[in-house]
Length: 83
Image (cartoon, rainbow, N blue to C red; front, side, top):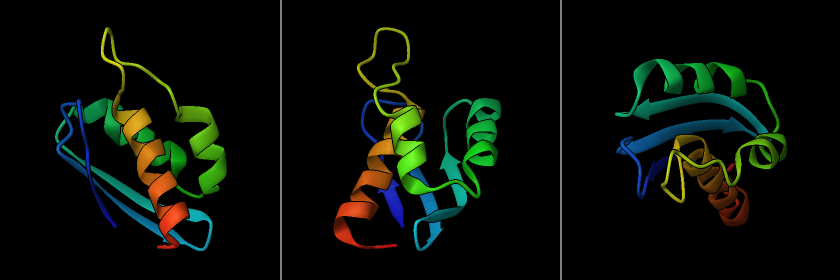
């Protein structure tokens, strides 16, 4: 699934899942080292666990962040039944 972000440097996030497990995440744009690290950390995790850990993370004075946008994307996958 491709999720177009809002309010962050990353333009969009490509997410692959198998059931409720994240099998791949690719951030396009943003802070490369940080987003690569997040992608590696969440691979193999359950969607709900990632949402619970990352939801609400802020970047400086912004109301969101790349991790928060990933959590929002995963919530969309979960709610839309796209996994």
